[in-house]
Every structure is written in C-alpha cells, then in structure tokens.
Length: 256
Figure (cartoon, rainbow, N blue to C red):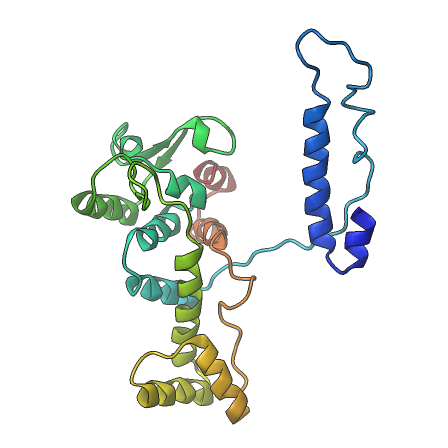
C-alpha cells in the first residue's frame, strides 16, 4: 500500500497513512486484562515495522518583517475571536491549539505569565510562559471585551474556538495583496493601484493574478500556497528571539 501510494505521486501522504496504520496495529497489539495471547507481540506483530519511509523535505518558512507587518494589517481587517487568537500566537510563539484552548484562569495563576496546563502542552507538563509587553497588552484588552471560561470562545456556548483556517485563508490573501501594493517593482504596485481604482475596493489575490496574466506581469508568490502556514508564525517567533540575542536554551523553554 505504501509503495502504491508513493508511485501515484503522493510520497508524503504515503508516509502519513503508514503512520496511522502503524498506530492502529500498535493499539490492537496491547494485551487486554488477564489475557496472554501470543500474537499480541508489539515488536513482531506490527506489519508496518521495517517499512522505509519516503524522504521528506522540511516544511515551513520564516516570515520577513514586511510579511509580519502585512499579516498584522490583514488581521486588523478581520473582526472577531479568530483574529485575536492569531495575534496571541504571534506575540507568544505558542502552538495554535494552545491558543485556541486557552482559559482565563491560566493567565491568573502568576502575574504576567501564561501557565499552560500539562494537558495542553506537547511535553505533557505544566509550562510557565513569561508574557512580553505586547502579549500583556493583548490579554488586558481582551479581558475588557469578553468573559467566560475560554479566552477565545467558539460558536457553541461553553466551547473554545474550533478552527483558524478561515482567518488564515483571509490573512494570506489580504497580506499578499498588501505586499504587492507596497512592492519595489513599480509594475506590480501600479497593477494593484489600478485595480483598486477600477473596482473601488481592495482586490483579491486572484483578481490581481488574473490582471497580471493579462498584462504579462510576474507577481511574487507572497503568502499564497501551502508554503505559508500559521504554524510558521511560531518558527518566526523563535528566529526573532535568536536574532534578539536570546540563547537557544531560553528559546527552547519559551517554545515548550
């Protein structure tokens, strides 16, 4: 199965499916209480063991200061809980799921700290994250707007926000157009300005690409495509910390 999926042109998907199958077999091989069946052998009974995974290039990228500025400007145009959740990720470097599940009580344990419970961290232990001034300002501002258990409540009462793909899809599109509008290439900047004047609104990235094709102007990729992920905001946070003089152990502690 792994070979067939690989040969169909999906090597990464083949690896992911193999990992799911391996976990499935591992769970099935855990002995039940009181039984001694010989076939429940975790080492020899998993048929996925020994299958060589396909090579994968590391995914992800680091955002430039200009891209971070465009992302911030795009978030300002997206109202609601989801945009604020992305802002918290940007100023703390936390995992998206940690921000989505954040509760007000986690910010009340220690002054100017975010105490993440072990159930929400990858290491399964409590993580105390000192908050930067921008993060503190954001939390204080959110307190004046919302109440309840979760910092970012979802549409269902009593639940946290369930997804961020919608805001990130908007941000990537809008931020890319903003980058094109401020491009050092006069042809690119003029193209966006002309569309704004003609449409009397902000154009989408798709509209810009169509116009660029008509004018035979090559537009930079910007934040379009799968290469620009929300999770990469976390990697960029770490990079900025290293550039600011923080040691690797400190950065590691911040990103636990």
